[in-house]
Image 1 (tube, rainbow, N blue to C red):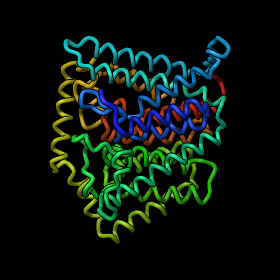
Image 2 (image 1 turned 90 degrees about the horizontal axis):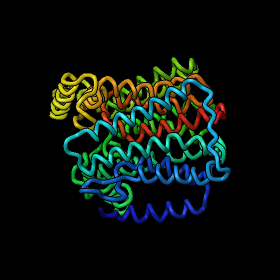
Image 3 (image 1 turned 180 degrees about the vertical axis):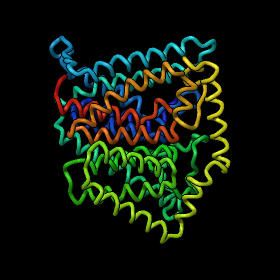
Length: 412
């Protein structure tokens, strides 16, 4: 195991923040770290380990040290709502199912244990995050989320200008945002005219951009800064040139209009969509983009390769429809084929019961709709083209919804 230059910087910063014992800084570190997919803190057997795991663990430890567990010697959690009981039981059963699927293998590598540990770190943080509502005001948490969205969007601008050779390569960008030593990344920071910001590729960036877009427009608070940020996110969604981003934007928008019943949103969404289409048409790229990312997608080498992955995952599911081939034993390009192939119908059902009750509860409450829309964007994007159960933006959105529901009812 070796530590990266970014890793040294990351551990110094986290140590200072931890000692400072500031809830806003701790939450900000967690949210930003969950978006830093393309940089490694340490390398384990030639595989990079990002800041998401370390930040989730550190946050959970900080919560423990500042909770009633240690301060009062008792654990006080009142689960009065059925959705939370169902989600709690399902999440732990889901993790147990994953761990067992790895344990029963004839040959287990050290990276297999890491993947299980990573999932456990996310789950523990998911259960820890409601406690921060005792130390952090709701408007402060919202300001942190908006601030991180702004940072990721700005990095996206710099990345796009760099990969289109408008700006020259920047050693700071390559050291603190992209771990260029990982040769299997899906981009080359020379010429790749698509927005992916701090993520490994545009499809992985899409859930954050779409989730952040709907998070902002579904809030009651609105100002010029929010409007400017929404417009910037809309532009970056277009410039991802990603069918995942386009499909997730449309489908998540439909969910938002149905869930919020906010007809006024149409006055904003329709003109914005028209401006986006007009911009692409004027630039002469509209038809090319639609052909590349939608109409001719299956005929490209990428589409053919992805179709092969899906067929392998589907075959694994058909061989063992109840339990699948095992966690990470196969990987389709689409979420449903990948999950069914890996963990079968039993694991898929446990996953659904872990997520859907929380999402539906969040959508029912006015205060938690923004976070729920963030989660919706992540789920929709995953369903289109992100087949990973440990995807960092998904777990970030789970954190945000759980925290939002805790704020709205304060029942912990």
